[in-house]
Amino acid sequence: MPNTRGPSGPRRPQRPAAAAPGRRARPTTPRRGAGRVAPQVRQAAEDGSAREGERIAKLLARAGVASRRDVERMIAEGRIALNGEPVETPATLLKSLRGVTVDGNAVKEPSPARLFLFHKPAGLLTTAKDPAGRPTIYDRLPADLPRVMPVGRLDLNTEGLLLLTTDGELKRQLELPATGVERTYRARAFGTVSQAQLEELIDGVEIDGMRYGKIDANLERRTGANQWIELTLTEGKNREVRRVLEYLGVKVNRLLRTRYGPFVLGDSKPGEIVEVKQVDLIKFRKTLK
Image 1 (cartoon, rainbow, N blue to C red):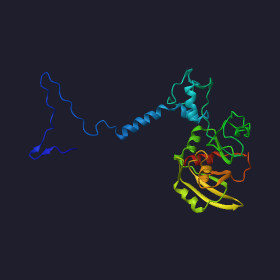
Image 2 (image 1 turned 90 degrees about the vertical axis):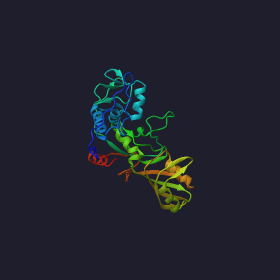
Image 3 (image 1 turned 135 degrees about the vertical axis):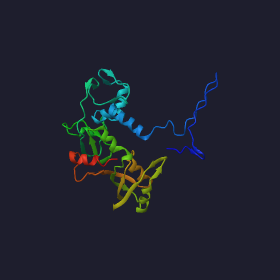
Image 4 (image 1 turned 60 degrees about the vertical axis):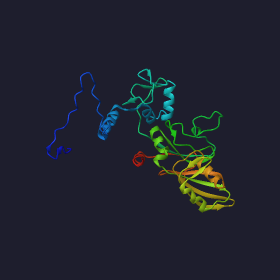
């Protein structure tokens, strides 16, 4: 409580002077900080929003309908409805997917997330359909597999570990650079590069205006005119490994992803797929930021 005692005793709080007849009282100037929302009030408001539900785009992604971005596009196209009425915004808050339809079909409540490790062969596109008719990963997946979405992409000629999940929210978590999930690649490259050059990548590099973050790279061995290089990164931008190594003067002629987070390719054969056990998946998700 502020001290109101003056030199000659207690001082009564002053009241605003009354306005003269016919004149309006001068508005008082608010104290500094008045109008700011106290943290606990702001938190209460946020908690209240959480009790109202979650965004429909997030719920549909978690249910495996599509990624958040694709859900937003589907809403704009009028393909998603709630109790027969088209949903107008992906920010619509819902407690459940009851009454939600996609293309007229009811959406089931999300099942527990599932994650699969697929050894992608070279020569397959990481997409559902190719206008040019080229083969995709879905041409090699088992027919009894549930609807899955790839976590990130491996380009046509890149092989190795590709994660597939039924949960759009898990997909998003694994792809975000901010989550910091490491990816490890082994590249066979034609030409010569030194370990000292590779170590400079630990601070990142900018190529043609594109900034690539920290890369931990090490020479493994030389085979004829080629060198095998192992690289670990957390961003996974489009053709990142190929572009960075070309910048250093070598040409990648084979590229494999061997690890994504704690999941490894191991000795699986191209085309093989294995499901991650639920207990391991739950344990891993707790480590995500």
